[in-house]
Amino acid sequence: MKPAIQINGIHKSFGSLQALKGVDLTIAQGEFFALLGPNGAGKSTLISILAGLIKPSAGNISVMGFDVVNQYQQARQLLGVVPQELVFDPFFNVREMLRFQAGYFGRGSENDAWVDEILEGLGLADKAHVNMRKLSGGMKRRALIAQALAHKPPVIVLDEPTAGVDVELRQMMWGFIKKLNYEGHTIVLTTHYLEEAETLCSRVGMMKQGEIVALDSTANLLNKFAGKQLRLTLGDVALPANIQSLLRNQEGGIYTFALNDMAQIELVLSSLRSADIEVIDMQLNEADLEDVFMSLVGQSTVSKS
Amino acid sequence: MMNNSYFSAFRGPWTLLKKELLRFWRVAFQTVAAPVITALLYLLIFSHALESHVHVYDGVPYTSFLVPGLIMMSVLQNAFANSSSSLIQSKVMGNLVFVLLTPLTHLQFFIAFLFAAIIRGLVVGLGIYFFAMWFVDIHVTNFWMVFAFALLGSALLGTFGIIAGIWADRFDQMAAFQNFIIMPLSFLSGVFYSIHSLPPFWQKLSQLNPFFYMIDGFRYGFFGKGDVSPLISLSIVGASFLVLAMITLKMLKSGYKLRA
Image 1: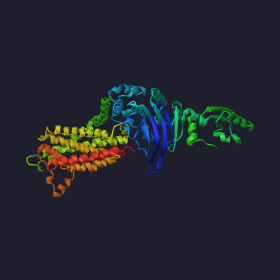
Image 2: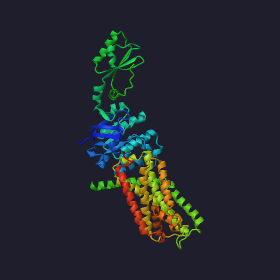
Image 3: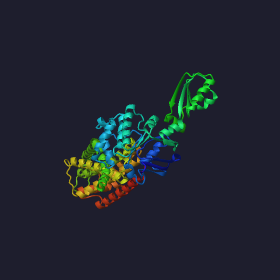
Image 4: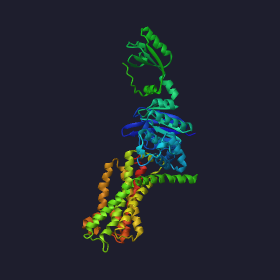
């Protein structure tokens, strides 16, 4: 089976700025994949190249085996991209836009049932005849997603789909996207909400400064990088030197330690006991993708004092 | 399956054309009614002011002479306005991305925008003719000449509108196109006078203006007379269209200003 997306050695420069420095990535059919990274890491540039909106300086990308430059018609037919910016056409209503969008891909009235399904699934059914201009921000976002799905593409790419979207809509949207994934659609998303990637995606790629710095299953990444977090309420104390290196964060008498394995709990506790420091409260947390993200992209907001 | 894919290949550009037509038809008050009324006002004022002062062709009253010129000027301006304003609006709004993400080829993109521009131009032209014929004595003597010039002229300006729409990044750049190129060329093209009434220098200058040939050829279809031979005009307009179409297709194919 051909991969849904195959990215080979993609470079992109804008003048002297190297936005992408040789990205390789393979996403299999049926995957739910998250592409994470701080602003400016190159995620959107990579997606724009995939979508044919930007030309690569070097390298190639194919969608289900079709090159996005040389076989762009076939590649785009198989691809649905939700742009990041909240753009809309002010002349038409939601249903008209979806019909047009499907029509550009050669789909006609036989596609209407699918359009109804999208409208229903994204909670847009009662807005179908409302002009795009009159929709609220959240509704515009749904319409934007609906437009990318209008031609029922097997590969769906969502670029920051939940930026500025309320919890209710996020739930509804992910419910629908999960259903599509279950039915066999490949889903790729970029997001700033790491917990979303963690709960939804089976595999994660992290980008930093135009390169992929981590690529693994979500579970492996969580195990490999972050381990567990121990939160201790100790008050204003001087921490023993031998456990300073484990300290991740300190705020108002609450100390957070990053642990690689459970044995380190005993080390921390015994060191505190020897130093006559009393543990007022204790919490043990599983690591999340945010920890992995922080340790990899190094944009830590941790304040060590 | 084969038929089906041919059919759907046709459906893509057809959908884009339909969207472009609906876009101006939804605001027909602004895109059709307004230019028709403007042209009729020109007709009223200029015919009233100049009827007894300006001599054009023998046996052709000035008001009758004016009508084809005004129709053609409006056809050209509106064909340009349709493709250029649609493109600049969807570029500034950002919704052009919905078309750029589709499998539509650069040729299909061109054809859809071109035909929408032609149809808008022809609808406006027909509107003016429809109202003017009740007040002014005017007959078409050579329908095919009228049709050929209306079609080629609107195609030429529709194509020019696509170039302007791709090139301009902001509304003020587009306004500059309108005010510094389209307006002077259309007003100095012999809409309101026969260039034979001009001093020799201005006659020569007018002959460099492609709008002059479109208007003169179009007028020939009504009166059977013109300032130059209609076949020369037709060749010049046809050749200009082909050149601009080639440039446009090249721009679209390279993704100039549309795909970074």
